[in-house]
Amino acid sequence: MHDLAGLENRYRDALLALIFVGVASCSSDERAAEGLKDNPELEEASVIELHAAALVLDAHADIVIPSTSASYLSDDGSSKVSLDKMRAGGVDAVVMSIAVGPGPRTEEGDAAARAEADEKLEAINSLVSLSDGNAVLVRSSAELVAAHEAGKLAIILGFQNARSLERDINTIDEFYQAGVRIFGLNHLGHNEFSDSSRPNFDGTTGKFEVTEEHGGLSELGASAIKRINALGALIDVSQMSKSATLQALELTTSPVVASHSNAKKVSDVSRNLSDEEIDLIGENGGVIHVAAFKGYLLNISEPKFIETLKSLRREVGISEEYNYPFELYWEIEDPAEQVNFITAVSELLGPATTDNMIEHINYIVDRIGVDHVGIGNDFNHGSGIDDYIDATDAMNLTEGLIRSGFTQESIDKIWSGNFLRVLDAAARNSTK
Image 1 (cartoon, rainbow, N blue to C red):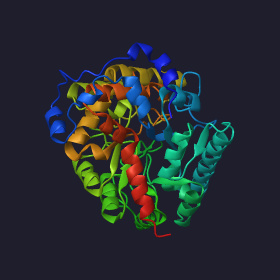
Image 2 (image 1 turned 120 degrees about the vertical axis):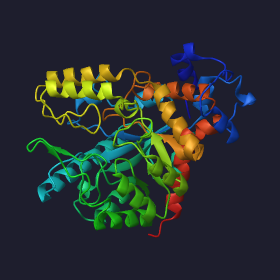
Image 3 (image 1 turned 135 degrees about the vertical axis):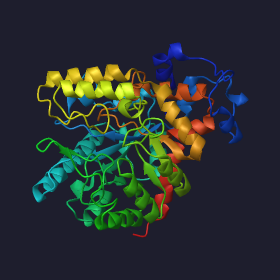
Image 4 (image 1 turned 30 degrees about the vertical axis):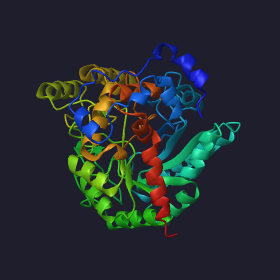
């Protein structure tokens, strides 16, 4: 449970009564029709009290190891979801993902991916063992809730990018036995299991991978979906291609999650989810977790923006093509020039705040309901916005949700209730 006194100290200037009058948005009437209208019993509650009452869960963060780029971390070089930051921000649980990036699709490349995955698994096990009992690794919703009630921070293991499976379905079982309960097959670039929403760029050829290599899932990928279902784990469709996502939804016998995906209609980048994907995830009973990731939050469809961005890319000698604005394909070798490019793109985009996150949340809620949205920030891999730079700022999102007219019941669902529901549903579906 939260240290309410500590939260009050950190946010003493934020203490305020909830005022719903004047909240205006295109979706407010629709939310009221769904039972999410203003709740008089909350009018005297504080943001702090409501945040402290919730079980706050972040459904996706990367694991920090020595090779993690400092650009992804806090200014002091530490994890954005370190245990102290979780405590300070009232964050009770986080899914730490054993994620690997793109790499050579060879036996040696796959072995290197597995070695990186093993290093990240060891890093989390060490973090827990050295926490003096402050953090625990949990494998079920019951264990997660028990940790919360005992005042401990909960870590759930996720997985991202099937490269580290080394083309062997049985490796899924090894990661499951190690504690992984959420499996995502894709990151940047296609692999032997599934097409990615972001084809990789080959700097040596100056070309992208083909848009679709398998037409979605490969035969190996389809087998992986079935095995994950059988084990009682969750399938994570974030970063899959649209075809792969639709095929996974067709194959799965359990609800799915998108652990860190936003709405494509609001921010038109390839990694975000189309309306068709959003609707089908709702029909599946799944949950879409919105990310505090600037490049996937803002509208980047304006022609003037696109032309200016292409001009910035030409100036530094990289391809005009991109999957999202900050991509530089690592062709810029000088770190200072990389920083200058990213800074220029960030200034072009303008600020991003929790208001932008709530725009995506509202969009998803209006399409498929509040039972199908959560929060998964992708911290430690490029995420962080002006008022939600790391776990310490989590309460700012709660305040924004309150201002948008969400009730305590709905906020509890968004922060963790929906995730726990589908985690339970997947576990019940196990046939192992």
